[in-house]
Length: 286
Image (tube, rainbow, N blue to C red; front, side):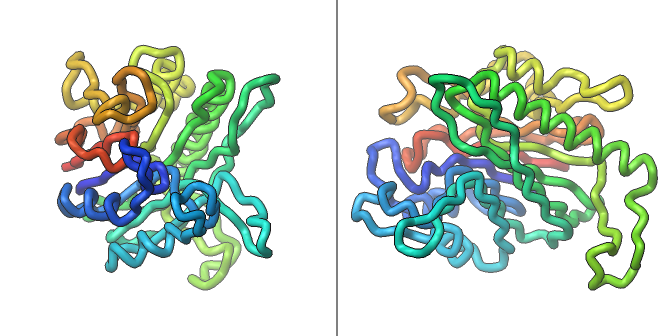
């Protein structure tokens, strides 16, 4: 099973030019994937595009990858000034069957004088040959450490709830008919959470993310460290002449539940593409 994460910056490359088709071509060059988890995907927001024209990037990406189901969660959802809506968030494309889909708004405690935007975690339950797996696609706040920390706590809570629900044998259904909203669907403890965490290895946020969740629920495990131990993470930003940031470091990760650690086969970073100010990260699970 191969997964890709990429903050595509709505198709804006390291050269500052917005070209979503270049982004799509870069993904295709990297190979075949079972699941694509993309951040900073835009619907509307004409001001983000060089020609001032709004694009539905969810529709364009779904069209570019036939055979994948498309699932979108907007962190930002505001009027576009022309009678419609502008949305900005995370997109998951899956060629594996998808069961339940959850869109979790992440906390955003106010911090005076600090800019921020609403953030979201998109959770899809995919059916793999090894069983159901939860894939969580997220993007944490950049400007505020306080917000990042509270968002990490929320990701811990999501895992804690899922683990305890699975230990009870799942949610009891009032009506077992498959077309009922009370029908029981798989939501396993096995999970991975991935995306742009806007923090570096060794930061307080990184250690908080990988700390035990509770006495009976283990923390999220960094897939890179599970695979390579103390070898430093490859940089995922600050490359290829991008105007941001002013130095190279890693802030894009896959974290896995403890039961998946032994199934992590490889984690790689494509540091060559300049189609975004972030680099794509690839996870291979046995």
